[in-house]
Length: 158
Image 1 (cartoon, rainbow, N blue to C red):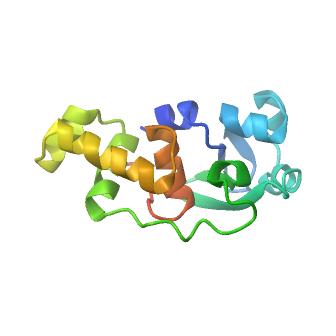
Image 2 (tube, helix red, strand yellow; image 1 turned 135 degrees about the vertical axis):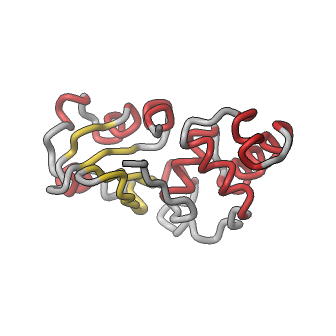
């Protein structure tokens, strides 16, 4: 479900096991840590994060399923705010969050529109508004930022 967002996002993301060992890293995380994917896998998350403390604002962990935890890393480059908190952003509306949640789950505009009983153009408008509020460059970036900022929580169906 989340694989497209994970793979395509410019936001650094990791998937950890219950021991906080990296079992998956996206391209952005590998770039942040200056490691290949193979080098990042098997590392403890605290060891990876300690290498980039000057660029790391926060990280958010969401439980995806038993033994799998998504970590989204929010960096100073992503927010353009230096070392200040990103909490001053305008919060997403309930509908914007619903749209982002459906998109994160793999729905396209038409599927999200049908699920919410709105038009595909309205889905595009909510997505555009969410991207603007979050300062995101893409849908994937908006989803990752919403997770990192604690505005969106995702779980995978078992």
